[in-house]
Length: 296
Length: 278
Image (cartoon, rainbow over the protein chains, first blue to last red):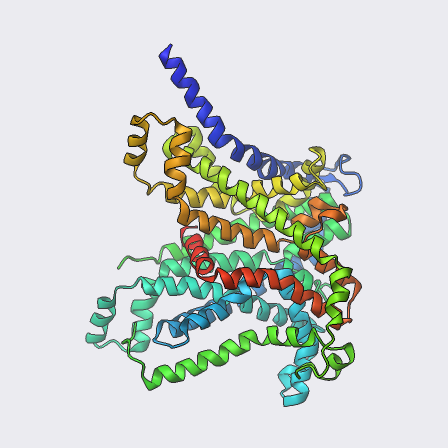
């Protein structure tokens, strides 16, 4: 009798505490995820949501044999990811080192560098659309520097670099804060010891700082890699994938396939490949950098 | 790191850092100063300080995007979602940590793995699921979506924190006759405050700025339009009318910037804590 009462209470507690979380998670995330395997092999559109026609391998054939734009967007995304991850992390690390020294305006500077991060990608894209098309043009006229006189966002390559610039501007401050936390955790006597042993700045950087902030590097590389690879909002508001489709990220290509071309089935198939690519890249990256972590 | 004295080297670094900060801030200056100019002045010289202030840009946009409504919608959706995310994810994490059955460990593994799934890989099927359950175009529908997507990271953060809460406190309360719910809400929940702040901040920034989910789930219901969606629609209609577009942008970024500037210490720390544990 007493035992069943306790068991009942255990079940009650399990349902009350875990139930709401599971209900929403299963409905909103898990169910759509598994439905994806079905819908990716169907002809399905957004106008008739409940009519999906099974088409077997047709979508997959189309993606692999007859969809150059998708593969171009993959190449674009990979290139964008590599370049912006390196640029954002180098800038962030540089800022972190500067802000770790004794500065009078340290707190203010930290706030300023972090600030772009709280604004969403959509709004940042619109802000920079103005800067690139009107602001840069004016600065170009005033200073005569050819960099500002380029047809910004008007060509594939200025579109690409425009996206990189805004991504780095948005992300660097956030990563800087993580690097500062990492640097602050290095024991002072360790640095002193290395100094006394005659280590100079480059050596100190390579053999002491970098290995000791490896956990922070793992986190920052993970965050920037996955954010860059999944870039969408910025793409939508800054270049809309253009000119033409030259600056389409993978996420944008999927969006356009489904919501502009109204091919939900094909979009789901692409989205499944997208998921596989994101998993592969982030897991590999974390595995690679984790191996390099040491403890002080 | 270096010695804590302020040397000439530090001064040079400081100047360099301030110059860089000005470069970082210059987009805000350009947007702000041009938002009160007439279109002609913007096109002639975007860098100068406005000669004549066209405050009417703001009043025009205020009505055109129905700012009060979009703002209020964003606020309602964000606040409701964040409250329930904090409540449900902390309860779930508590149960998973204190009752680590095989089932609960599996649930935790499932939640953590789900963090890697990009939104695009779920969105179309989600449109199907939400329309089937009649969640589309409803306030509770979009809140339900944020609850689902918010669970993984939030449970993960609470899980990490609750592991460090000593069990003795709870046992003492239990001896005094509290039931499990009382123990959680009166003893454990208040102790979670630091991580609650982190969870609130991370989810607020995400939900407030989110664009694609509201577009898909709110769909045609104009009464629920959020701020980012309203601004995007406005930009579609007013391309090249920079005077109005910029005023709209300033109005859209002001709330989140004020939120950041007033709580910046907590936000910077919260975001750092969130990513270091996450």
